[in-house]
Amino acid sequence: MTKAIRKLTAATLLSTLKACGYRVFEGELNLNIIGIRHNNTRANTFNDVICVLYQQGSEWQLKQYKATTDAGIYWRQNPMNVSGTAVLIAGQHKSLWKLGYHLGKYRALVQHKPVVVLRDNNHDTELDTEVTPQAKLQQGYFGINCHRASSKTTSTQVDKWSAGCQVLANPNDFDEFINLCDQSAAKYGPYFTYTLLNQSDIKASK
Image (cartoon, rainbow, N blue to C red; front, side, top):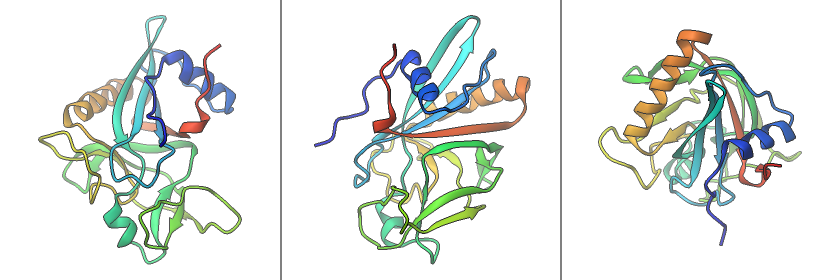
């Protein structure tokens, strides 16, 4: 049984980003958007976390939202793309997103630059996330957005909510998230870097 992603702190995430060699965005409301993928990628639940780390005054602030960084089982077994289900690879994806509309329906973060995904095409419930020499990688525009699940209630099962997007489970959390993005965009522009970590990447703060 894998452990849940523990309650994180700003110090822990800062240590982790620096240990991994990733850029830390500094300045008032300059957002660091960080996804953490749970070790258990078989689950069809929102067992991952999306964090927003930013400075307010001289203090680091951290918002932590229940989310999925993985496609739901439906799309694992019925890939939208003939090459297989899209799995965003771990790493720092610079200027990946911009403010826009998910499927033209509501405000979200939408893909702005080409991104590398792994294609899982064995149609089972286990999501393949490890980049190996045998892994099928593709780079391009695949609609890897950051959006919410239901507009009315907290979702517990991923199912069709994600075919590779990064999806927040709670609509109120998502509204808060987009509000932070709006505030940041007013100062730094509408483009956002996304850093996706694996649970095993998390480093204790020193």
